[in-house]
Length: 503
Image 1 (cartoon, rainbow, N blue to C red):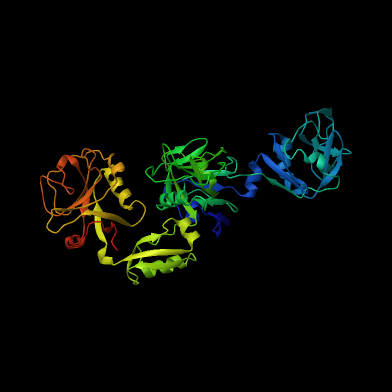
Image 2: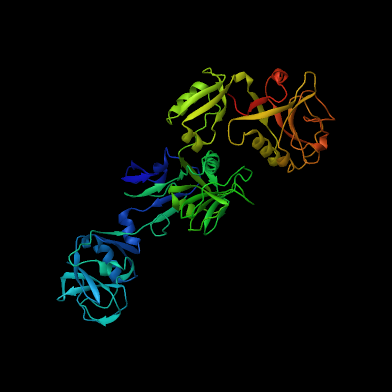
């Protein structure tokens, strides 16, 4: 059988399941998968059918009647029929052969009702009629109605006799409950023509590069955690501590991906299920191009797998040589600075934001000798303190972070680094340490004037922590996990490069 998986065709064996379909795809274990039924299956369940004409599209909403069920089965055969006649009372499309039963029962028709009629009481000349006004009359096929014309009503007067119905097809959308199954069951049986999405694809907006980067950073783990699943939008609050700025705004149509740029909830990502007017506090970061159904059915606690176009362009952590190949794969030039040797580690990239990098065309990669990058380990279970440290250093969104040296002097018992005074006000005190060991990494908490200051202890102490504060004024972050001799080389006001990874 042939199915479409995340926009690409796959050929699977008979009896295939979702497990077979998602093999090799970006799929988060335990997350929802959307299965769009085949056209044949949709024809059985769709309540809206479109009639495509040379002057536009008309849509019939089907009733739950025998005539509507007959229409479903006849849809393919109606293609190619023309507008046979038009009066001030109705229009007639046909004729075509059916097995409809002749009846002289009078129908009570309202404006835009759609029904069958027999020419000369002969089912070999069956017509589809659309009422232009209300009337009661028998047209040889009983009083039953197919449905009601809901879209393209103006075409009843615009169409000319002889113009054809070019196509007839079920109207479906990614948000329709009729043509989509949302499931976590990997044993779900598939059929030919099904379309499957294991993730959403977001096309990013170049007009909002900072907001687009927020999407890329959150999507770097492969998914969004769903914080809200309202009737209006799906939300993700994974990172509410982010510097944003007003960017491109606009009407928030279905599928629009936005980021709040001001006020409570700055950094909040929202993907819209319903159209909403523009707001100056909400940037348009992109649009969902595939997998909308996964958004419409998401509930708090779910994970929705995410892919982006473009993918994130970040060379930090690569060697200069690796970074060159990586950037060239996107058609971008590399400008090496710092240590320009092939083996040097890229510790900084300018521009860092992907959309700005694409716009610039040339990327400056600042290299540092591998041995100059300090390895640390965050071990605290205090999420607030760990978040503060990673946010201040940049480790929250890239593999190599930075700390600016505040004070370093040979023979001192610690080395200290600048922090963030504003963010440091939220560092609630931890349980005081009993002993601070050589190599311990910590931060001054909100109880002391220099809250936010970061330090590494160079000697053991029971009285003072990594920043020189008493135990009650210190929050422990983790450990310096490298050669202690490297710390002797640090100088005041210089930048130290750090990583949690093994380079």
